[in-house]
Length: 320
Ligand SMILES: [Mn+2]
Image (tube, rainbow, N blue to C red; front, side, top):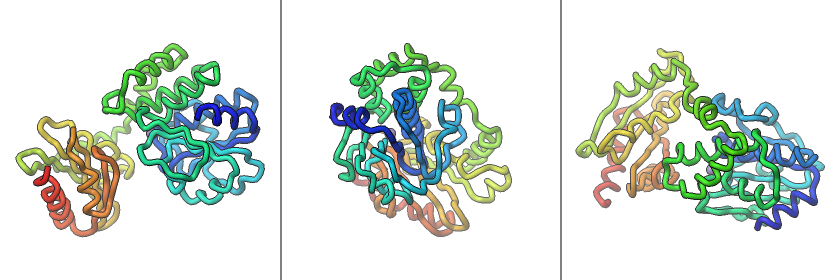
């Protein structure tokens, strides 16, 4: 499939690049890498994302050029839809984007939608960034520091810093090449992992004060209420990653974070280690996700919500 993608790149001159709503490091790094490559070839390129770039990714070279409104796609020859298994995931502008004649989908998700004829998909790749690196090698593109920084960030974040099981030997070979091409791993790690607002760390402390265990300490949970956010002056996005601290505890197989979105409405993040499938638990409560990372929403008092979630965990856990 590389040949068809390269053919589109060579034959078209005006490109749109997009990805899923609430973009992550892989989405942004992949988009910006393609942006620099196409610009370097003298093409007209626009990156559109429905949602703002999270502050932590604002260091990515070119991120200030991303736009968040899309009035028209007139004159766009081709669109790259990256890290996105389903056109629905690009957000409100999905129909407008779907109307572009040539749609190229580059992705590493297991289930892939049928919205695009030109597919470059490898579910064994760590990230969309890793696939883009392969594409650039096939094209013979010279990878500069800006491209390398973006792809390295895509890989780093989608592998949880080379910790998840999607990390293969090719992932390290790719990362090594990117470091050779100018990706500064220390600088990138600091930008992503060591720029937390102090308020976020304080909120983390309050959240960890709520730590409880169930099922012989195999299930651990914490919660964050609107009242806690207000007291600390914290933003909702600061709770990102809290559930992973619970998963990091020895013996914990299922980690839960209850986050109160608004009064008596909770978003529940579920994480697991190994073969424990939290997607089944989220599914029982109307949510979804992956084997080791899922989410759902439940309404009620914190006590009632905990009861429902623990009930779903016990229902699934007893069958493990
Ligand atoms: Mn990804």
